[in-house]
Structures are given as C-alpha cells and as structure tokens.
Length: 143
Image 1: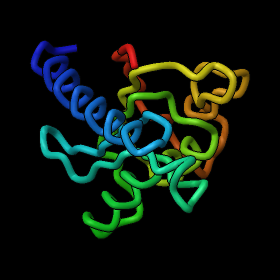
Image 2: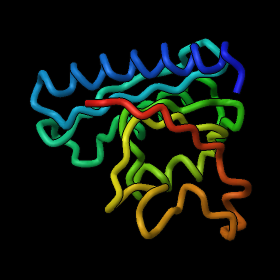
Image 3: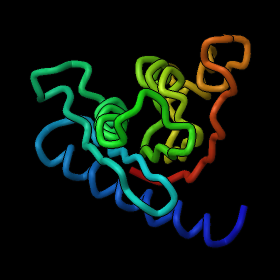
Image 4: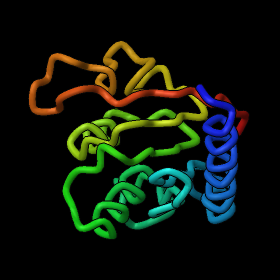
C-alpha cells in the first residue's frame, strides 16, 4: 500500500474515532464510521444504539445510507467505508448489497464480525448477487 494511502486511511480513521467518542458521550456504543471517495468524506455517522430509538442505527448503516442518498445511486464500488469496529452481520449485509469496494476496519468483533467470526460474510465470494468481496484493510486501533 502506498504511503499516501496509509496516511489518508489513518487520518480518516482518526475522524471515526472522534465520532465514536461522540457516540459514547451520549450513552451509545462507541462506534464511528464514514464513507469516502478518495480523500472526500461523503458521509459520516456515530452509533445511535442503544440509547437511540432505533436498535438498527449502527454507524455503518447510517453512513452508507447517507452516502448513497448523497451520491444518488444504489451501489458505490468506488467508495471506502471507514469504521472503528468490524461490521456486524447486519452491517455486512448492507455493505455487500451496496457494493462498497473497500473497507478500513479499526477493531475486531470475533463473535459477530463480518470478517473474523465463524461466518465471514464480508469476504464471501460464493454469493453471486454480491459479486466480488470488498478489499478489507485493518487499521487496528484501541477504543
């Protein structure tokens, strides 16, 4: 990976950490996510569970939905999703359905994570409707 890409990944992951801190501050699970195309942030979100009214308000889902709305399309293979925590099964489904091309992850969730669990759906290449799995990059961080 090029140094400029590593620097960009680090900078955008630090922004996700700020969003995670914001989520924790209001009583939610400390997860922050954003969607970028190159160095342009298209959308960002802080986790809104469990304190929020919607149990499905995961930061990845919110960020991806906002990005697609802003871009005016259903798929974004050119986009990168940055998230402080490995996407769960719910978020993994949304990521695969929207064809996000690259994911940068800050921490693992081995029991229900889309990469490190017993069901690595984020990497599955045998579900034809999802096409090619996204590139997964680990930027391990402490939360």
